[in-house]
Image (tube, rainbow, N blue to C red; front, side, top):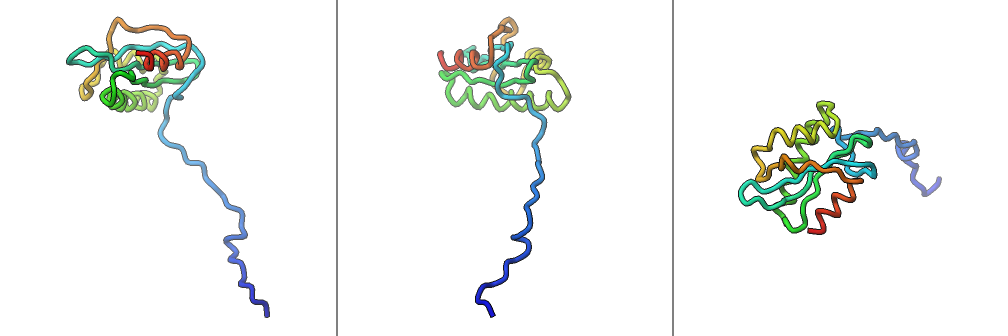
Length: 133
């Protein structure tokens, strides 16, 4: 009789993993051209960050302005939630950007500046803009 204990058969079987994904989301980075808007504080007009979108890579995101501190980072939560909602409804990133510009977020402290729609070579350029100020 052997002193080794038998191996439980479930440990000898191949493990089968099922891929589970979350809700639909836009990609959070692109090297392709993007358009972005400036989001400013409703009360004092200080720039909080930039909301960008690029249809070529189905990408969109929020870049908080470094000088905006925690207030700017927190403002991104409202923007990201609305971007996710737009993606769930099948909107292109540029359509989502236009929607967020036309219909300001009532809960947030920021508002998109209507005349601020600008082109950038990629998402990294918008991120660099947010970090440089």
